[in-house]
Image: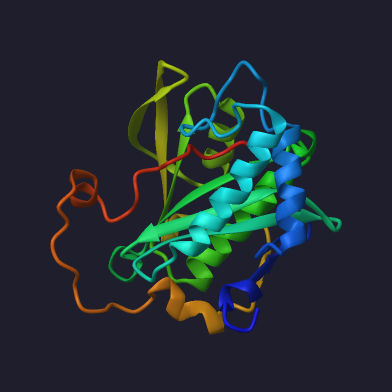
Length: 241
């Protein structure tokens, strides 16, 4: 896409490729989400987007990506990339930020289709997005939010050097859900970096991420914005171990 430089971004590891989704990629991702992302008895997502019939779930996948694209701005963005393995779309990986030029902090979310979990693909996708955040965009911190019961994803955070950074409470399916917040600092990422990753096509898109400070915006009026430059996590991370 000539006028949308984000479409040229790719990050590759020995197992996976992260890339801006083509319409065909998005259609495949929507179908994958409709097939199933987690066991029916456990809801890992605060937004509960996987509840519903397959057609509804598939449309939600498309709408989340389209909404992020339509509302993109340099001071408030979420980048959704598809995870591709052996030419097949197997899941989604995102990073997002508010006021990134100042905070240098990103939020990660991700999921793999149920039939692609347990194969090591989630770890490679995590390594790829961290390479993009730290080496590509110059982030200083990355954080994730993981449901307490999601033991596999908790283990992935610890494996990549994330440290515990508090808790978050949400209402999920009408019940209280407690999640752990995990933070990875740049120095810890450098120390735990094990999976090689290569970034392509980022340079033309850098301005879209607000990598350089601009004139300060007026003081935020909402409580959530006053507490943190980074968005309140809409989904816990992650379902891809």
